[in-house]
Length: 331
Ligand code: TRP
Image 1 (cartoon, rainbow, N blue to C red):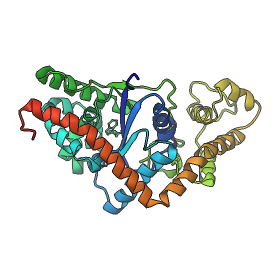
Image 2 (cartoon, helix red, strand yellow):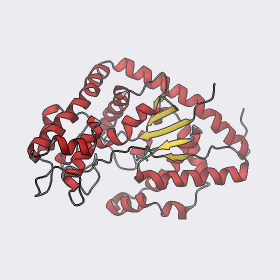
Image 3 (spheres, rainbow, N blue to C red):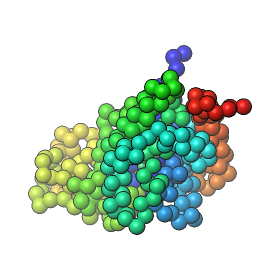
């Protein structure tokens, strides 16, 4: 049998994923399992570049991991694990940091943005974060990495580090490519449709969490910012309606043409209600599976443990190869 290509991706556990994370990324993670050998990680080591409350962080790690399974990541078929359960990430990260230039990291736009936003805590971890991300990917010899546009620069850096290391030591790392899905639903904020829907938005009405209940979802869509026009059609300058159409299309599979026909002569209120209901409908099975799984902490911890063991076995091969190349004694 032909070996399947390898995929690696990670998500931070700091906030409950939004509808945007689900439609834009996580739903796709589930689909990719059909054709690829997938490794998915809750990247909790990455989270502490910003100060976290320990109790809340723990709760979020459980929640994020359980949600992955609830959405359909199969812990048997794929590898689903929590990053801090595999010590190789921190180890390879150190090695790779010695093959990454200060100047390269200084050019990362996310670092520049985040350090401008939080001048009180520009820690070294925030600076070297992309090196840890490179370690995540390179440890599993991933061919493809599904990432959003905001992570493309970090992925480019991972490639550069891999190529640089390979040029010195021979073929150690697979050089990963970004995986940009054919149909990416880009979901914007419901309060400012020129901005991306973000799980850290201060306005709770701006984003839908995948765990919001039906009434909350419908209420948030009702309050979504639109325009002073009345027609439901996809057009330049109608960012709010365009966003709602894109969400409705993603959750129902209908084309923009279908949607324009369906709502011809109808008002924004009716359309918003339909988007809210359809969104609540597709999240309902995820939420009920989440409720079922999260009642069984023992099972979740067992999956975490098995996932970490599988991840460890794979990443150990890479790390040992790296250590041997560097001249370390591998016993
Ligand atoms: N940096 C990514 C984010 O903030 C998360 C991440 C960490 C990641 N390691 C990764 C994504 C490896 C893809 C591959 O969204």
